[in-house]
Length: 120
Image (cartoon, rainbow, N blue to C red; front, side, top):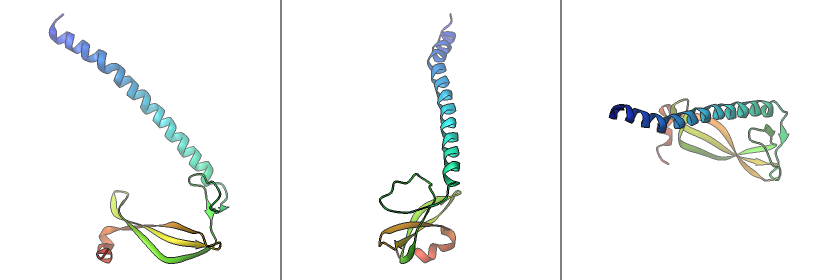
């Protein structure tokens, strides 16, 4: 057996199982993502429940709050949405029982509003 063929054989013996296991991992990860999406769809279609601090909530569970927004707004810099840089906006909300929670209010693209945030 020539040296070249032996090297190809060694290379194949080493990398074939690695490649095969990575393929299995990708299939497993795709199944996990499908399960996450199906779980999200079932949770988001449920009716909203009243938000209380002491309750345990599932990610993405719809909730409703009673209260009012305060004057405190936070801008998270270096946020990305659809490949565009900008700011995430969080607004402090006070519930009727004087609990506070930050509500994500959306995204502002940086190129349109960079001058507004130069003094932070």
